[in-house]
Length: 162
Image 1 (cartoon, one colour):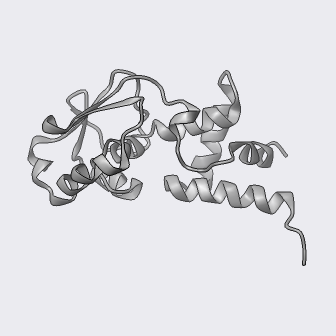
Image 2 (cartoon, rainbow, N blue to C red; image 1 turned 135 degrees about the vertical axis):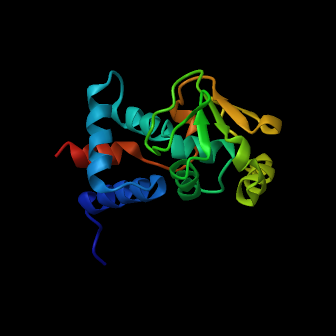
Image 3 (tube, rainbow, N blue to C red; image 1 turned 180 degrees about the vertical axis):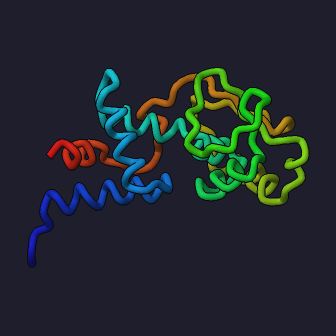
């Protein structure tokens, strides 16, 4: 039986993360380069950047049942940031940003169903949800321990460092 190479393991880890966050290679590489330039550990910086994306935050707050659905809600202008319409899924959420669902969109069945299911899934510590007002707030920047997906970010760093 042939042993799997380090390269293929690293590649598979990168593909897993890219698929989970719904990104193409070019955009993922730009995130990595940005993470590498920032202070701190490149792998952790990458995961923090991915977590701060608006489509992911909409999913994490429970307004969507998946990141893909979160992306669609953002693209269809159902989401407001600090009271302003934002329809860019890759928008970076900052500390103290208030993420809410438009008044007209609050009756959408997919959103109400997702909010009911959020109690089982839970919300990361860096976010705060106000279920009655269909809004949430970023209390802090996400940290590595807030990311529950089993990701070995060091493999991605090694892959791009070649």
